[in-house]
Image (cartoon, rainbow, N blue to C red):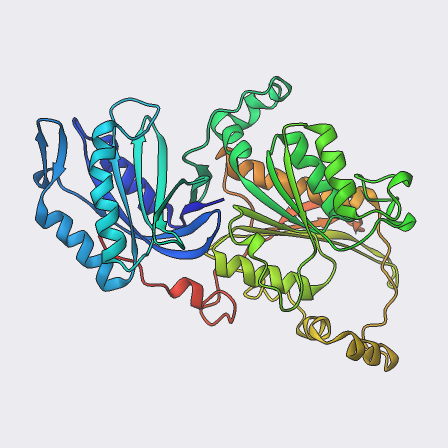
Length: 445
């Protein structure tokens, strides 16, 4: 899988407006940095754009061409900044794709740019009727040139847009199309989502993603199904006891939607790099401990990936007892969980210790609390609140809430279940997790 990410939506808006306003063909370039590069292809973040003026564009006998000075400016800027290049141009009618003339021009351009930029991947895209077709080229291990199509081209802003999503046509989804819209449903079918944790909240998430029409889901968990899980794990039954939670979850998701592709992996670890999370479009964390929660927060910041963190809790040691949950929605522009003060440093440190040291800690009374109560209706309510925010983001109906508090108790003056958004400050400029990620210099156009 490979992705081209516009983490600054204003850059894409300016680029699209430039291409859409043309009578003939127009050109623009995006400058990129590489977030990861696997066998499936590169994951690139756009860090700047250059719009080519009509004065630098001429029409020849067999197509449109850029002036040499314009091309030199783009190449020299990429070389000076160490960025990759994505060339954009428009076609008058869709669906977008490369013409024979485009192919003839691309061959020498790709070879030249891969050599000029020391093997940094090159990409090119065609815009038409609001949609994009984008491909990448890179040097292979054998010295040849590899070519592939981006799995997703995303824009992360007030709305999550997937510019190269194909229309989704499933009869079973007909009743939700009027609510979400065709573009959001197409995005749902194209997006790759990682669900980390397949227990009480994670099973609700996985099941709902299958119902909504997501086609590409990664489920991560190490645990086996135990009988005590069956009061809240909606993807498992008695026949699944002793089997992996990921296996039971995949079986349930496929029963809901046979078209879905579900891959599985173990849970996050202290030292693991987790390349399987490098090229997903969204991470949903459903973990019980701040150790793995911190790991996911770091990975999301490093890979510039939106992250939804879901947590529920019951405290029966106080009077009246507390019963609730919360949802935090983070995007590359912040704030992250560290900025929000939602991570317990002591808990993270205990999780990072070797198993024998954790045993010694328990002997001395650290981290020895019993497992907290857990109920299916709290998990379901909190997860569905989170997915409502995701649906709002995909459909563009409204900006999603950054933080939701779920309270099933209320207070004497307002008894009853309450779901309320909380005001969230901007990112912390000194945050140890995400501040350095936001300091990448933007390339001025």
